[in-house]
Each structure stands twice: as structure tokens, then as C-alpha cells.
Length: 443
Ligand code: PMP
Image (cartoon, rainbow, N blue to C red; front, side, top):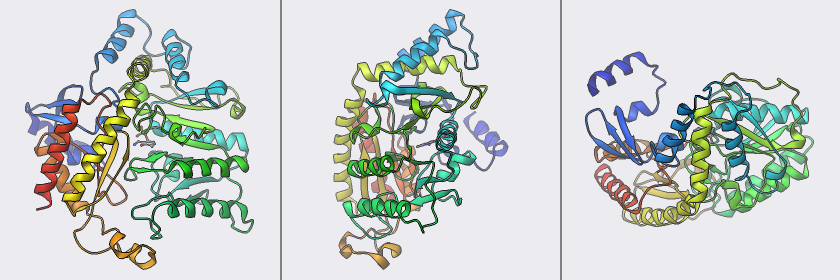
């Protein structure tokens, strides 16, 4: 039974479990946006395997692609040997790459998770530049292995210079709007150009075009272009971590396309495997300094994931799902905004495309850190984050058959990452259930 499974697994698994803690369900069937639990209850899934399921659960084209490989008798495990399935996947992926990189792209298959591809990217820029340090941003999330972790927010490492990620709401310096982005850019320039800053020219800069785990913080396009200029002028490779933002999620196939920025290195995982584990790093050919065998890994050749991924990429492209994410995302954003107007506990609604976040705040008081340094009028200062309220909203959503995830530095941001195939009716149901949950939790 559902209770037995939950009880046994929570006794056996590490306390480090994350999703399972807040979502006590036992999925046994799933299709599209709907998950069915062992107890027969059905849920609309706005977590989508942490942003992995661009086409939702068990999409027919994905299943068909997997079945085709299974029925063909092709080897499932091929290390990094060339295969027809890999050839199809690479061709499909290369056809989506931003111009300026596509013509000169190299691919390295990494193994199986996003964090592996981040690791490969960091190692590559270090090898290519002969330098060691890194530039990374506050609030960043790049994974849980050592290198990716040191580039993520909250880590302490002498090799990583942490720069302020631009944020309008709750800017730690109390700067609103474009001032936050301007400050971030100037900070970066001064750090790099001041020979007494103690920060030697780094091997690379890694950033997320929209911080996901950090609380759904879209980087302003102008800031991204500025970072591109700053890094290009100093010969510093720019790594875009599109593990979560890729494959149409933000309303463009790759999120960097909104700004026109062409990174030197891009990191992909999650949706590129069509729900199966796959991760790659893509980079400009002149960075390809690795000698044979310099980056290995047994599980780099997951044929099923490549087939599922190729089918997903092709489907997203052929059906204009990035454009769909842009229009439906804008509609949902507007609806969430009006929800915010009715609920003082909503501090801000943020997002791009179908990567949306609602930051919940305490009804009274101002964020003390911001109060101290703020240049904003007191009415515009953010109130303290409300993680308990966010957890209550998540629980109320679940009771109403809606799965949402929390994020942000304070776990106070309710995150919506529906599949790009979400229908208008499902979007309306998501918004209804969330509004209802919010009304109950805030009472
Ligand atoms: N980078 C980003 C931007 C991510 O969102 C994540 C996962 N949430 C990762 C890297 C790490 O991916 P994985 O969990 O597959 O290691």
C-alpha cells in the first residue's frame, strides 16, 4: 500500500531526501501533466521531474522512440562509441544551437547528470586557459558534485570569486531595477581590473540565464550582454548553464537566445534526455584542448536517453513549443500577478516562459538586511521571506491535486515548472488550485 511504501522508504533512505519529504505520494502511473498515486489520487504535475519533462510524462513520441531502439536490437550500453542513435541525437541537438556556436561546436557526452556536465565544463575551461579561478554568482545552483558545488551559492572556496547576481526584488544592497544589474557589472569589472583585488584572471565565468533553484530569478538581457562583453574583452570563457532553462522552457529554445548572447560553453541536461538521464557540454572548437581520454565516464552512451532526447528536441522544434511557452507563460504570469494583487503575502511574481515563481512574504515588516542599506522608498522594500507559508501553500496545493516545488535562498518561492505541453485548461486548473491553496494557507 501507499502508506507501507512511504514508511519503508523513509526509514531506509537518507535524511538528505528532498522532494519525497514534502510530497508524500507514490506515483504509479503518469501521462502528460498528470500523475496517479498508488492510492488512486491524481495530481497535476508542476514539478516535471525538476524541469526535465518538456513533453510531460510518457509522451507518445518519446515512448515510441524508446520502443524503436528496444525493438531494433541495438546495444543499450555503448560507452562513447558512435552509433546511429547518437548520430541522430547530435544532429538534432546541433540544429538547435545558437548561431555563432553551432558552426564551431564540439560536444562531449558526460555522464548521466547535469552536475557531471557542469564538472566537465569547469574542467575544460581550466584546461583551455591554464588558469584556475572561477567567477560564479550568488544564489547559483550548478549541482552537487565537488566542482559544481563550489560554483553554487553558499559555497566557500578560494578558487571561486562570488559576484552578485542581479535581482530587482530583495537586492541585498537595496538597489531596485537596473541598478542591481549595473552594480553587478561594475563589481565584476572592478574585481577583474583592479590588480590589487587579489583575484587573478579566472578560467571562466559560469551563470544561469534564469536562476531556477535560486528562486526563479531571470537575468536581465542587458546584464547578460554586459557579462558577455566583460568576459570577451578579457579572454574569459563564458559558460551558460542551461540545464534547467533549456529546450524551450523560458520561451526560447535556449534561454541565452533572448539576449542574443553566444556563450563559449553551454551545459545541457534534464530535458535533453527526454526524461532519461543524459548530460552534455557543448563548446567552441578552439577550446577543445583535451587530449584523448582526458574526460571519460562509463555512462556516456545511454542510447535510450539519446533516442528519447532526439524525439523531444524534434517535437519541441516542430511544434513551436518554445513559442507556446512564451505566450502561455506570459498569460500565467499575468494571472499570477493579479493573484498577487489580492494577496499581500505575495511579495513578487517572477519568471520567463513556463519557469515561474511566486515569492511569499510575511504580511508585515521589512527585510532587515535591505532596510539597512536601502535606497528604495519603504513602500517598495521587500518584506521578510515566508518559508513556512510557502510550505503550507505547497501542502494545500497537494491536497488539491497540484504538485509544486519550493525554491529560493529562503525556500519561500513557490515554483511552477509545468511541461511545455500543458493545455489552456490545465493552466487554468493550476492557477485555480494555487489561488485556492494560497487563500487557505494565508488565512
Ligand atoms: N544546473 C542547474 C541550473 C540545475 O538546475 C541543476 C539541477 N537542478 C543542475 C545543474 C544539476 O543537475 P543534476 O541534478 O542533474 O545533477
